[in-house]
Length: 335
Ligand code: PBG
Image (tube, rainbow, N blue to C red; front, side, top):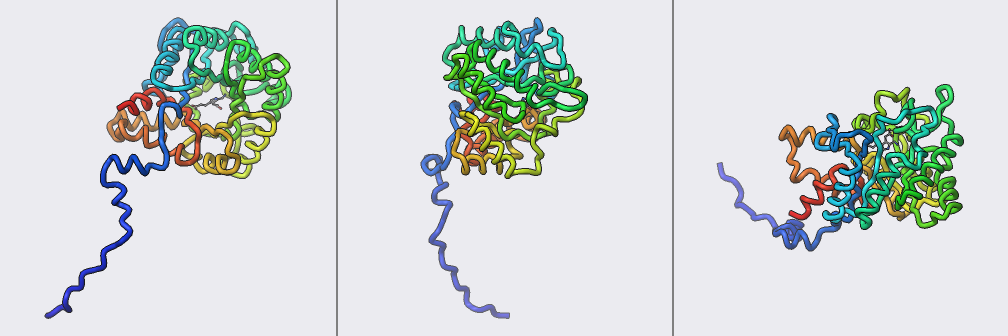
């Protein structure tokens, strides 16, 4: 059997691979970059005696004593990470319905802020404004029956934000999702002489199962009654996230947070393209736990997958990323 004479195909003119031939050209045409300046490192401080306590659901993450938190701040500064985010684990302070511990001027967080500002003044400090770490029911606000009271919670949150600002926090980050709290906190800060204290609002925070390991880390998981669906957002929604961000900007937020991260990149993209306000994505505890589990089993290559995941946020338009991987990632960037 004879076949017709072979005709060579035309060569393609468009060869996108030309721009991928060597590291230097890949670098030259990269559309986004990731540097340590893009990172915020969340740190959990505890009021116990041990310097470092492992968190079983978050391998290589530790609850730190105040002294170790200062060392962590120093490490962050030396790595070029601009800001750390502080979260408390209070096990030696009684918890109650209104989270009294949250407004103690000599509490764990104010003391830690002072210690860090004293030793490492170059680092930015952001604090979590919410009551969950201080309440006996584990909710972010004040509870009556099975209801989370909006306005009564705000009164507590304003005072908590003021206490943090007074201790030297550069930014307060309300993560409670009560209505109107940004305006109330802005007013409280202005009225008390803290007009330079930033508000980085958890504007689009979803009721998420990805927060599980964090609740272990801060010790609020055992106490949590019910869920947070009456104040955190339904994961079915996008337009609502945009309304939440619009409200928080109008109330005085300087920057906003989308949380969780990787499963919510569409929200990051919509928020940044709609508002152009500094927007941080939070790669939360559950995302960290998933990746660490696979890395530690040798199923994912930690030297590659962490930076790849962080880069996705930059592509989606985020100004930066809050991530437990921050120091590891910053070290990897240094090569
Ligand atoms: C609540 C708060 C949560 C996180 C940060 N602040 C958890 C929650 O809403 O229950 C989660 C952080 C993480 O999962 O890494 N104030």
